[in-house]
Amino acid sequence: MITPLDIENKKFSKQMMNGYNVEEVDDFLDDLTVDYSKNYKEITELKAKVDELNKSLEHYKTIEETLQNTLIMAQTTAEDIKNVAKQQADQIVNEAKGTAKKQVEELENEIVLKQKELDDVKKQFDIYKAKMESLLISQLELLKDVNKED
Image (cartoon, rainbow, N blue to C red; front, side):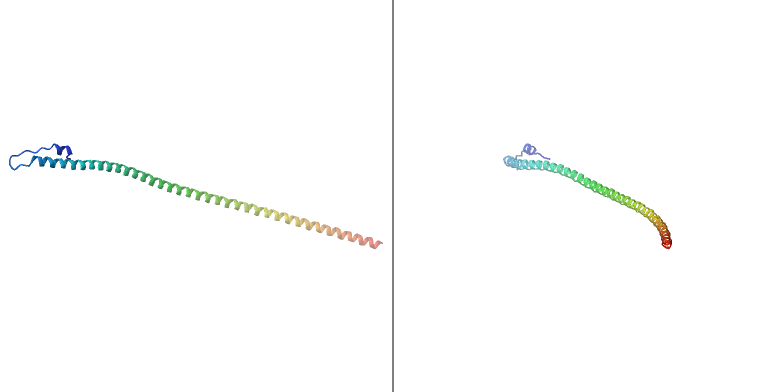
């Protein structure tokens, strides 16, 4: 790339006949050097700004990628936690069903035992009742005999 200094130092050969006016060429080159210097400086500044923006863009792309990875990891973790919680809930429900079934079986066994006890008590009551009835009948017979003797 031609620098402003290159333009400024450019020398033209001088011709005697039909040549350029050296003063006009020098003035033009001076004007060109000023404009070119402005453009060169602006281009340099813009290139620096583009480099800075590219660095910022790369930084933000890195942040975006990190955030995407973090989001994916968070979603995966949430799914894992949800699955583990469901498994634990299912296990708790199954354990509760097992415990309830065992308790029902124990209560049914206890009911059977209490029913047997009740049947035994009824039998004993029937035996007692029969004995009492027999005793009362024998006592009544004794009273009849005593009344007959009087």
